[in-house]
Amino acid sequence: MREFFYEVYIVTKFQPNKLNVSYKDEIGTKDFFFPRKYTLTHSDEDGKLFLSIGKRYDLDQINYNVRDEVLGSWEKNDENDKVYLLITLEIDNGDDIGNTINRDKIFRQELTLALVAIIYGDNLFLENNKELYESPIRVKFNSKFSEYDTLEEWGKVKDYKYNFERCKNEFPNYKFNPFPILPPVQSPGYMKAVKEKKKQRDSAIERALIAILEPYISSEVYTLFGKDTPYCIKQAEVMDAKAVNTYGPCSEEYEIVIGLKVGKRPPFYNNMIITFLIDENGVKVKNVKNPRDK
Image (cartoon, rainbow, N blue to C red; front, top):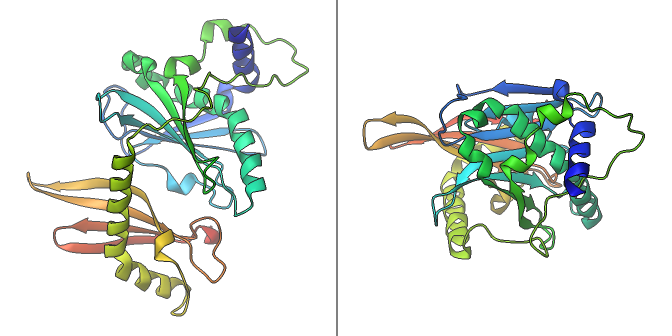
């Protein structure tokens, strides 16, 4: 019974012709290399889905006023070297827990559709690396409220594979919207994918990096918003980090993207995004974005 309703949900909710897929950063569809990231957004007007596949998240595709994107990345478990698909969701929308509760419900209702879209959109890559169908999916719900800040197991990649043969000629006249049947999760649904010690270490490294970049951040804040504009450096976050250039066997250049909330009444989203280039010669500011000016 569960399998039938799951298929019904995919048939009625997911429409391949409404999925637009774009490849970025010269990402391939044959061999598996890290990093491989997904940015999935949608249009409320026509229901179209937009999937960007690349070596980094497509930050230009994200609506920072809404934060309803679905982010995905292939990761490797440090303990056993097995890969898994990590999905990241921003649950909060301001400081009202009521908004968080509502957004958490909506994300859970629509996440099955999002996972099907991601797996379908990257099907050429997955068919060339079929062992990845057995990889687990872990979903990180990000929230400032501890009861909604969770990491959950959502089955395996193969559970969300679009069934071409079954769905090809089976489009009943649905007069209802079947409630999505979610994959089983461990009761009460929470688990930790990484050890607490590693989590604390990664957080310390991130805070240390932001502290080192603070003089450059303050200069860009004052340039864009004015000299007396307040901000809290502790609320800054590393949105992306990667090596972009290699100079010989011992030297690399890194691109670091920092998000910051600026102003006397800062919004819940990062209204300032600074991209840095860092190498052994020092720090350079690559670009500065203010999403509200889009």
